[in-house]
Image (cartoon, rainbow, N blue to C red; front, side):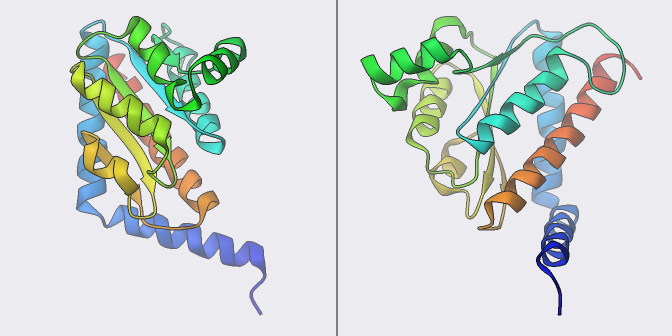
Length: 192
């Protein structure tokens, strides 16, 4: 009998094989690499957001840009939306939770910036609202999604969908793809 750990490993491998054989996902990832490189070459900013575990993934990946990843180099500008708890609780209380990302993005965004969202369902109202706003501001939107992509799939400029209903497996693949994209971004930006 296969134990739970082995089953989880099998499911992760199955999803990675799906990604490896998905021309749509691989093409989107390559396009996202070029988009991010161009954004930084043009002195623009990148914003990250997500809820719960997806917020943790956004935080993790944003740190790879602002700190360092594979080698020592200058830091890259990145904004992790709603990371200030005073701001988060004030906006959620004074406005509503759906505005926690939007208000902060509206305060400092410029056309041609990039917004990267993480959502396992693609149904989060606060993410839908911020993506809608970003698109009206000519900000490119990249969404890492799960399941069938939800509502975000159809409104984002780039939707990378992991076709699973297992939240943990979706998030693992999001981080794997995020790491892969950012490794290539770092290499291209710093000629490594």
